Length: 234
Image (cartoon, rainbow, N blue to C red):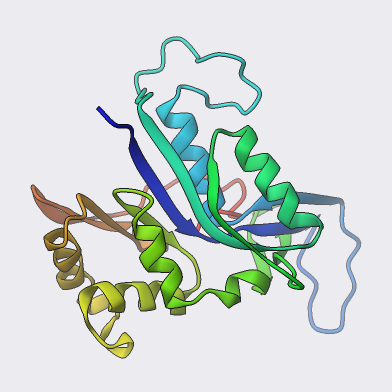
């Protein structure tokens, strides 16, 4: 049996994180307790999490599969579809994703363009954050990229800018983009299913997620958790 593929269409963002006792107000400067640079983006995070789950490797540096984990689908491949710039972060993304088992052949390196960057301010006590984005290479995406990306796998996790997600849904469903909104997601999910997508999942932030497959559809509320850090949580 040919290996199945999880194709992830999403963002690759270089995260520049500052953690401080509180978030500064207008015109105010606050000394940060810690500064961290990390490679992230919801798409990249999802791709790595999917690979580690399927291959019993919850930690990047594991030499072998961890015994005792119940989930393992060794025949599943994970491919990342996205865009990076030709700056210092673009190359790092390719290397890091490859180290984590991800097929990066769907990542476009855009010349003379910076990668997407996210500046994150985190409040130490509450772990609440504030983010500023510069889309960089992600903003260069066009509708044609999606048609090519659909050939890379059986499904797609769409975590990218709202305009791009709406364009994707509009293309496949045959609707105008202004017709694509939260109220129409159940109907559009069914249209994806009719076109051969096995599972459709629409994330709704703090409200949970909506899913649909051949067995039915439902809204799943989000879990109530103790918040440690909301960076990368969607």
